[in-house]
Image (cartoon, rainbow, N blue to C red; front, side):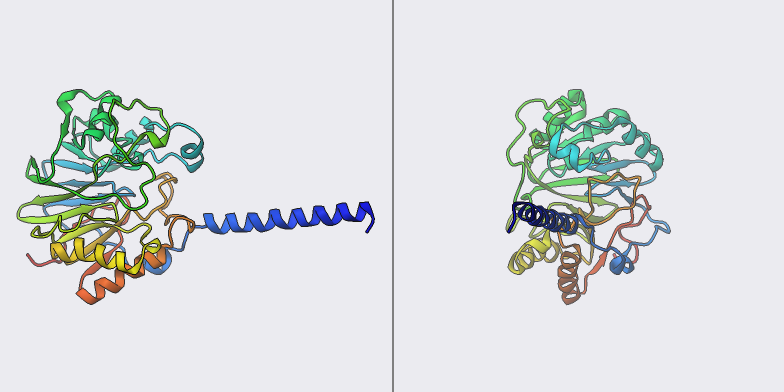
Length: 330
C-alpha cells in the first residue's frame, strides 16, 4: 500500500471512529420520550385546602389560604456545561420570574431535602426575597449564611423534630441520599456563591412529612432509605424520588418501595426528581438523559409495585396548581 493510500485509509478510520463516538454521545444525551406516560399526569386542582405546584426536581410550593411553604425551590437550573466546567450561583432574575409566575411574594418557610446545589442553591435567595425561614441541616444553614441570609431566618432541625408553620406541621426524619452520592460530606463553613457545584455537599438527607388539617403527605425526594425510619408514620401521598431507579437492582427497588410507600400506607405516589434539571423552567420538562437514567424503566418499576398494592401513580405537571389529596378518602 502506498503512503498516500495509507494516509487516506487512516483518515477514513479516524472519521468513522469520530462519527461512531458522536453517535454514542448523541444517544447518551438523548432524552427519553415522556409521551407514553402522559396518561399519568396529575389533573389541575378543583379546590381543596392545600394546593401544590411542581417546579421540577423536588421543588414544590404548598399553600393554603394563608401560608405558603416551599420544598427546595431550585429554579436557577444552570446548564450542564456550566455545572461541569465552571462555578454556579443563584440566578436572581430566574428566581424573581418564578415567584411572579407562582403569584407569591411571601413564603413562610423553605425546607431543603439535602444540601446539593439542585436542592439548596436558590434557597437563601428565595428566603431573602420572601421573608421565609430556611429549614434544614447544619450544611443547609451554611448555604444560607453564605447566601447572605441572617441568622433569624435560619433554623437547623433535628431527626424527628416537628416545626409548625401556620396550619402546616413539618416533621423531619433522617434518610439517605441515593447511591452513589456524587458530592458526599458536610458543608462546615458559609458557602459563598459562585462556587463549583461540588461545594454543595449533601449534608443530612431528610424525608419531610407535611401535615395540614388532619391530612399528611411525605416529600421523599432522594431514592434511598434508612431501614425502619418511616415505620409507624403515616402519609396518604408520597412525592417519591424516581430518578435513576433503572440503575438499581430489583431487590433495592423492592426495599425502597417497602420502606417508603408500604411503610407509610400511602395510597398515591407522585413521581419527582425525574426531569433534566440542566434545562431551564422556560422549556418543557423532559426526563433525564439516557446516560443518567432509563426513565421508562424507572417508571415501569414503580408502576409494577403500585399495581400490586393498589396505589395510584401520578406525574406532576410543572406550574399547575394541584390538590395532592384529590379523590382520596379521609
